[in-house]
Image (tube, helix red, strand yellow):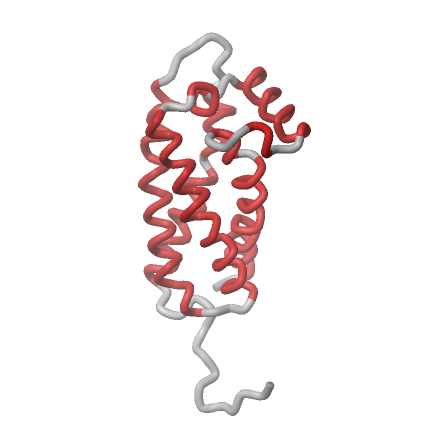
Length: 161
């Protein structure tokens, strides 16, 4: 894996941990669980960009946020560990993750494209969501076509501890 992709993927996983914990989870968890600065940031985002999904919270969207908290968040930690250690075993879980997230992003982006409302800024709101389609899609494709994403293991050589 080249350094550019390595750092894109690693940065994506590392950045998505606080985003999930402090931003996205506000859609489904009690407001009292979040620091005031996080709640104020979301209020500013709603007022400025009128994100229809985070403002109106349709049930299907809430279910995707729960999947982000309970399925994706643990994967971000696992993937961070695997990428830092350059562990090839992350390949199959990364393919599943990338395919799952790509599938969940399609209805989100369709809803954003179809929404019309006063003050809604579709270009800006879509640009916030787009990396969460593009990076997992690229990750799934990259891992699917790369049998050993971090190169061959050093089998045959003695391992020193």
